[in-house]
Length: 556
Ligand code: NA7
Image (tube, rainbow, N blue to C red; front, side, top):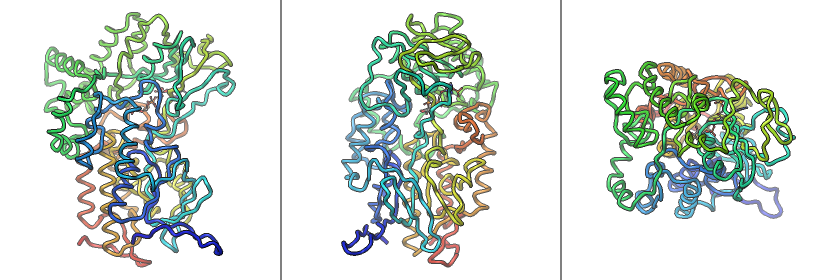
């Protein structure tokens, strides 16, 4: 089925380029998808709107940006040579190093020749007579493909806040999710940071060191755990490498979140107060996201969750000297972990600096941005530069920007108007041969993204290989299977505390966005098993057709 792209003869009208698969995005998902499909003999074209590979790590260049999953685990596992040869310098690699890794992968596996950079996919329309997708790009190119894979990322559509007067601000305005490529020097400047999510929590300590004065505008205080970042020694890397196969297996099959760590065997209320405190203390000292896996019921039992939340609130009070500032920094309107927990390097201590001010914009919302100041609660805070750490239209935002038309001309945006609907997070009924990597309805942002990316890429590659082997042309999620999956995702979410927070998991950060818990919370191991079972049963819940004849195939 591999069809090399055809180019037009000089005297004839241009024939559309034809590929087996168009992949949208050259971040970690798109890169591996290309590598995998090409290895199976498919012709693939990747379109990437950025000027180079890396996806979220290409755009998020703000000061202090680094991953919050340890780099020895936030890395590809598909090539043992790659994981054995790449040396991560720190426990949590900084953004430039992760970007360097993405570039290394692109070069090592010779991927660039099949990627068109600086090219957006504007439109994809399914042609029901030809059973193929017509894809239009920002350079007015039209190509056709049997399959389209959306590897568009979950946190890629930076969200500009709708604040009166922003466009009239005279100084520079930066969004953390779309940071300039050249170094930005805030020395001698009065800087305002709006937002206190992960991006702000990482960048505030660094900006504070440079700026003459930093004003942080906080709407919602966030829980954050010390990262305890440090250089990795050769011995530490080696110890990891020797156990890599077991670490990777555990992360894929047993962990809920795709991270290798101890599995808790008891709930928080089963321990007495002293025992509990010493366990929290040990994890606090170790640092990192695994703080939330001290006990097995922190995500489901509010009383258990309160013990962890109280512990972190006490730590904030111990760290921050001014009691009023400490109180403002203590999160009090959501269970710990129900918004993505942050990890930081000296975030709370930064508020002890004389050049840092915290402004509570929940009680005194920002009224407007003036040419030289932010006005909140009737007071003007003068700033020379503004940093918007206001997040993303998460999980669906980048997909929604593409005009995707499936059967009967229905757009994906119309279908998802009341919230994203998918079968397994992989496909949406009415949109044949269109796959989504780490889409809504899959563990995605609740997990180590690279574990989830690899699982989806492998599943999709197996699926299209199977289709080819069986002479099948069209694959589509059944409406009934999709409805059941959507209900299941929702039901599982509501057995937890997650829906209690106004988080981007729920779409709550975007005014007017339907509030539905988007990722699948059942755990990566469970989810992988479900996907494998579906495939083993001849892609149960999908309709597959050969040419124009609908037929349900049995697995061979
Ligand atoms: P987040 O986590 O969505 O944080 C955005 C922050 O910006 C959050 O504190 C918001 O407050 C605040 N925000 C958003 N809009 C406004 C307006 N209009 N006014 C004031 N404050 C606002 O994005 P991040 O980039 O920090 O992190 C995203 C993920 O990247 C993170 O979870 C990691 O997985 C990596 P709110 O909470 O909505 O009250």
